[in-house]
Image (cartoon, rainbow, N blue to C red; front, side, top):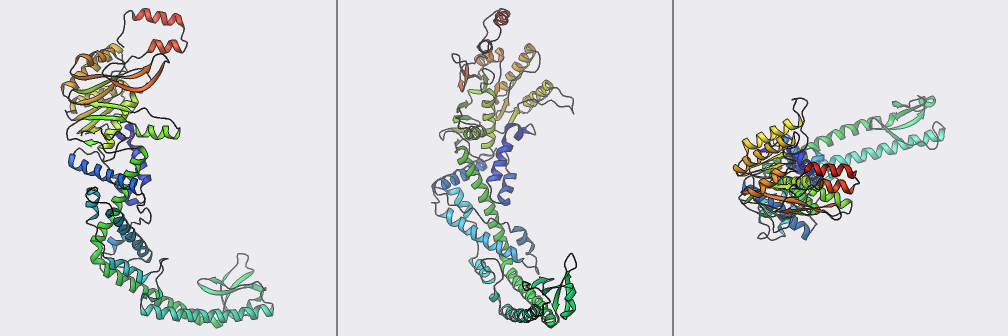
Amino acid sequence: MIYPRNFEEKIGFDRIREMLKELCISPMGAAFVDKVRFISRYEILSKLLSQSEEFRQMLLTDGGFPASDYFDVTPELKRISIEGTYIEQGNLFDLKSSLSVILACVSYLTKFESSKFPEIHSLVNPVKIDPGIIRNIDSIIDHTGNIKDDASNELSSIRKRLLAKRLSIVKQINSTLKLAKRSGWVTQDTEITIRNGRMVIPIPASNKRQIRGFIHDQSSTGQTIFLEPEEVFETNNEIRETEGEERREIIHILTGFSDFIRPHIPCLLEAFRFLGMMDFIRAKAKLAILIRAVKPELVRNSLISWLQAVHPLLFLSHQKQKKEVVPLDVTLNSNQRILVISGPNAGGKSVCLKTIGLLQYILQCGLLIPVKESSQSGIFSGIFIDIGDEQSLENDLSTYSSHLSNMKSFVLNSSPSSLFLIDELGTGTEPQVGGAIAQAVLEKLNEKQTFGVVTTHYSNLKLLAQKENGIVNGAMLFDSAAMQPLYQLSIGKPGSSFALEIARKIGFPKNILKKAEKLIGVKQLH
């Protein structure tokens, strides 16, 4: 179970999905991106992660994977699977280009040892393309996609007749144009042009009776008419008829090819599915290289043991600014299932929580994650998050009511294989009451042996983590001398909010700070 419905938007996976689409070459690959879903079955997830990792290794070894001419001809193939239909000429060129790319992909992938890249090789093996298909296409079209003159004997004969008739017309109409120029009926720079697919001579309207023929068009001002000389009219009609013969013969050729290819369509559809999948897996591998992601050791049980984990979107943002992201070491296991993170505002608590949620979701969608390769990752049956303001005007829910509604869902639906993430647990209402409810919720979730991460400023939650088995404190470290956050997570001890210290550093009025210290009265838990 993934909660809430807008989980991907809240955690940032919608941007990851969009990046994947942008890295795809074709709509076929992008269609696979749309199908990406959270997976909790070990066998399926292990296979998908291995595919991504193997492709990443291939690209790092040899970046020459074919990355153009990914035309999707599957709609046309499905259409011509019906007897009596024929492939369109433009699709024939796309089919040849795509089949050539598929064969090039197979050639690229199979040059790597199958023992080192078993998952990718298992995808290549079912691809079967009869080499006679490309040979047949080559006999029909040239490198520009035009039907060859010798695609059939009949077409060759037709085109020879067409050429002879067109040359005859050019000769006749040029003769008429020269006469018109000598007689002064047209200017010396007048040239033959085309109207309605027929050769015509532009001539001033005042001289239209000087040449016998047929008017096909006139200029917008009406001062120029486009005239077809009478002596070429019949020949032009013959050309039109012969062009009809040519078109019918081309359809005959395309029909013959379609009849030939029809038995191969099931294999071709599978080959195009392979091309789309390779586009998709390549995009996953390219993204992994961009965010420096790898495949951690995948284990069957629920577990997080990450070294040098990095939020991928934060990494890319910082990379543009030439800044470094402080990596996180995070461990959640059967002994410390729930991590309570405390520390100052703007110290990185929320980023840490979102990093854990996003990376686990990315991983269980079959994508590699930016952690150290020696890291371990388990599988969760669901992820629940409560991050940000969910006030709803439509349902008349306040921010705190929304948080409570989320807590209710967590408690009712979580299990020992669930992961929950709560930012600022208990806030939004009176601190004493909010802290009490937060503690009761945390105790119940711990009782259910579920896994989770919460951020808080509440002292009672820090104390609970110190005494309750299964819950552990974590602190976002703070340089108290320089009074600035270090953005490093340290597990084992709680963190301080450093509220008075930060106020003192920014020059808050001393008399107010003294009053605040007096009101506190006792040493608070740091």
